[in-house]
Image (cartoon, one colour):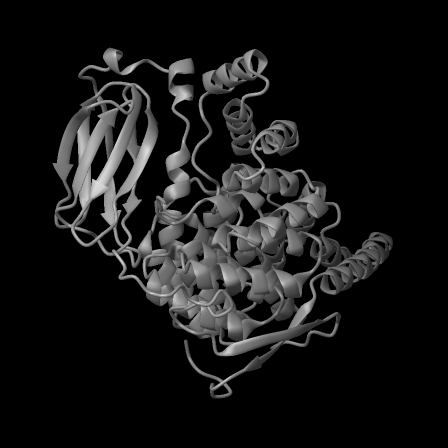
Length: 546
């Protein structure tokens, strides 16, 4: 998982730590407020409460470089605000509303002609009360399961034949991959900022702020190893600064120094029991193969901050380790809380698929595709799922048709729809012509000449039509694109045998058997590496719909 993803909440959650943003950077590389005049840049966004509900009539103050107020506006009924006619520069933003604590972002860079979107979250004013126990967080929807251990096994079992099991594992991995990059922090400062900060460090090597900010910029740019010396120097200058220590832990993790990352993060936990820290620890534990510790840290992060990223990452960790029922619980809770999250529905569909509820899984992914029809991700999951179905549902093929209609120049869209139509030919109520399928597949390989699976499907189609010469050509093209593609060698051997080319058939079958053995060994190794969670369901019937 991505270590920098732990830095970004689903909305901008302004806390006291955010208010420590440096003011001196502004003077280093950006125009002063006196240079800001009417222009064509804009700043807009929304103001919401912790549950994601819009806050109407909130007052939004816009300041230039921390000076006197420049403009003020109010949010509309949807909690949205906007400032237009701005010139490039540094702005400060503050939101106020009765019954809520103020939220402020003191340093926002807006480029000339840029339309920048920035959302804020206001926390309700809380009555004074004893702090909750650190060991008993108040999760919004208590989980009804306990993960008690892990087991290392290559006999994971499953529903259906090996094709289904492989598809299930592929979908679980791809669901987990949706978490990558989900928490990347605010965009890195411009190149000029890095240059200015380097000059500042040269002028004042003993400046905590210059070292800290340069290290932070380098972390944002994915250059964690380069950032470490500056963050270490800042830590020496001010060992008590939480944000610098957190950035240092992130830099250690991103550079692969997991030991120092763990030590630094765990030291911070003594005084800051925060969701980002637990999430960072989860990432590091997972990288080190400590999956049980990782899932517990993801859970703790979600309990402390039930944001969409935290819930999704917790659920995808459970799914990745073959705990489909607990994963479904988390994704269901996440979907209730974030009904417009595409990937939460994808996670729920993936959990249903892993649990053997294939029709229900397709239904969830189809619903995800309806949330944003232009998004190709749900369609890719539908395409993967149909590989495990002998005859895909009409709804699934309909969505794949929409995919290719919206994205006619997308190779995957053409391929998935072609396969759906080809499989539906077994259903007399949904006939499709071979020429239509062939046209889609030819368009696929024209768009992507290395699309090996499309060549295989063309070969299958031509073999079905008894055009074995063309089928052999198709299978050989698939092998040219992917020399280790088992199915292409197997089907080529069959085609050679049917055309009387016995020696070529034997050679291809021998290649197929070797590749199949190597592939199976690889799968076994991967299954050993991904340890399976041992879990217990509480207060739940043996199986429930999601």
